[in-house]
Length: 402
Image 1: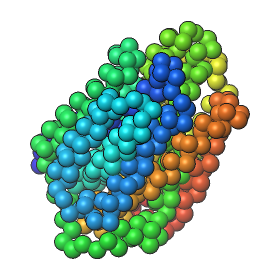
Image 2 (image 1 turned 135 degrees about the vertical axis):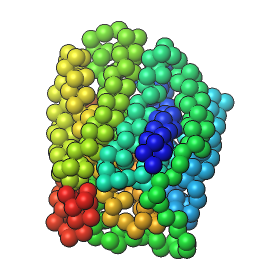
Image 3 (image 1 turned 120 degrees about the vertical axis):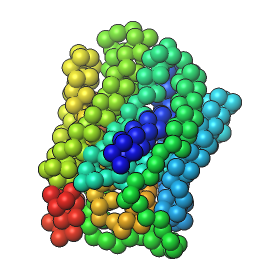
């Protein structure tokens, strides 16, 4: 059991890292495209939002038909990775201003619904009083996978085409790796199909508060991940050449997003011992404060700016896995996959607002104050998780540690 568990989690982690580079492969190249191709800011926003819309669409389809609990998760993950890789590569066939590029990103997003929540479900099947740590590893893999396109940029010399190809090839590797994973003993296959199963995520009070906490977290997370590279580039170009600013911004973005993987794992380890509501409330309080303060460092010493953003990068995602772990512990075992899919789908639907909210705020008040609005979400999330902590059902979380 020990070796099977270790090998399965290791393979699932590698598969997640390899597949999820697709998510940010297009948004990672935005700074270069805005310089080299004079890309319109609205189209740049759609590179990310099209994936979010696609992901939400995919999660709705998956939740209504309870696909995550009726289909072998390995098959669903592999097929989704293959289609997503093809859709991402297809971007190279069209002009960047073509609607087909946005359609390709939309298709990639649909496929992500068969990768991200499915990977988390696989992790939950192997949990042994360490649900937070298990899911933390997988969300850490998501975080690192989301950061890798920015690293591809550095080694590709900011040639955006290489970044797209590398991310697609990486997803093909993921489709192969996942087929060798074994499913753990904590798994039940849904025997009957009722579309109403998905509504349990909001009818049940404890699940509702956990989901509201997650929404507060998501209000901030993906807007930060989407625009932090442009934020760095805009700041760095004030103190260095444009070429240096591009490469340094890519490296800094990789570091800030990627370091969140450490936060996910440490957050999971801490949550299994101190409680999930403690970790989520602390992380959101810190990350919300960072969103309020970071603008004051814009245009200043890059070392101080990046150093502060590294703290933000850890705090902003250290709690992410614990919302999912809470849902897994509070849900019917036969519906864990669907409940996780509903949670992530509603969360990513919310990100559509904040991803598109940042550019007009930048035009209005500049980068110095653009991220302040992101603090609203985590501060409201703290309230939701505090409410969850008071419920009797919270005793199911983290072995009673809440």
